Image (cartoon, rainbow, N blue to C red; front, top):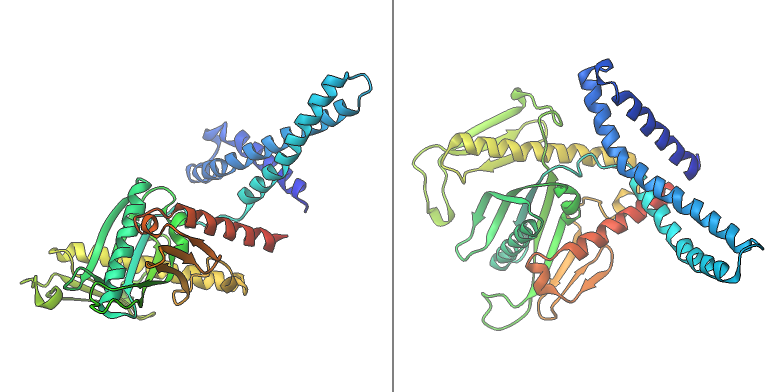
Length: 357
């Protein structure tokens, strides 16, 4: 099926849904809801298809006007100018339609659970992990998203061994899903008296928030332990058994939550993180089955892949997957990530379009 046949098929389905939805009483409620969602999803696609069709029609009209012997010279000259402008615009409209027709990631509109862990580098790695956590917090604030810290495993000097947050808002996972991987920093540590540049690392994982309908968990597959929580260096010791550790026996996944004084709240947070990890695991397995070339793509999801370097002495940040270097490290670390996110999204779209060609 060529592109034009595909576009015609989409429009036919859109018109069919529009006709069916005009008489909601004739459709079962759950079917009506599914159709409404499909119709809403097709609306921007059909709008783009119509704009493309109008541009193509106008291009044909202008071509006819340019070759019409009855047209005066001024009219032909005007038509030629408009023709050149429109001729350049049509490929852009075609590309936009193709992008809209790409298979949607069902998780794109979901909230996200962000996990940041210190890697190699000791205290400096923990300080860098805290910097990354704050970077994503500011990025979230810039987009009007809600950023809720769920767990902070702090060191004594302001670093994080591990930090987890729930980020809620429209299209959160779509914007953050390419952040998973190893982030490397090159700078003179605050703890270094000699002024030497050190290299440290932190691992970032961005998981789509899962609902119970996304993942099925049997109670018999869970082991839940409760115990007294304690902070760094034995501080903030709780006198009640409020800390919760949930082990998913089939996979061996373990989630610990102890930040809240309420055992019930810690358990709810731990279950939310466990659901997200299981959902992410499920998605990874499906994606591996769908594409053997997946690891060469931007969104490989490989948590061990070094994806980005933050070089403080030179004030630059480099994303190694797309060879993008920006000399505005101070702004990036302060949450200005949109240029990087946009470039990663465009690269992902380009690779998926190429795979369909």
